[in-house]
Length: 140
Image (cartoon, rainbow, N blue to C red):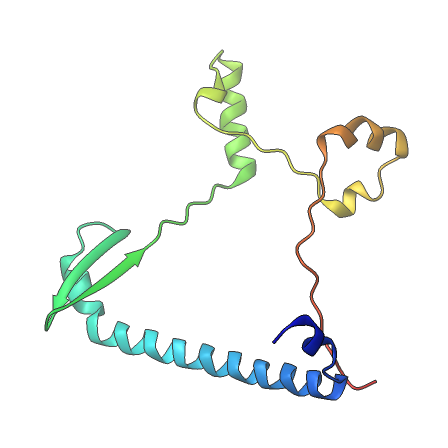
């Protein structure tokens, strides 16, 4: 279907397509969760016996099929405690940048209330990227 055909679709049909897609997404999500629970129920104990650490990839073979379990590591640090430790190291003359990567963020809600003079100071380091727009249709 080309753009010419797409723009000819009336809003009531677009609304129906939107509803149908939402139902399909919900069904896929439900089936995905059911499949996950099924695979987990069948293989979790086997993977646990094969795993030699808490995270990472483990493969097992079942009736000629390779089944893979991947447990990703999700590490987070308490930012206040981390800053305190880094400040202590820096006060002892350590170059903390050898140990950590530092990222600065300015929440948009804070940026919005800054005085213009302060904003101008930071504008050259700021870029705004927007994803593609989201659309929805509903009966008005």
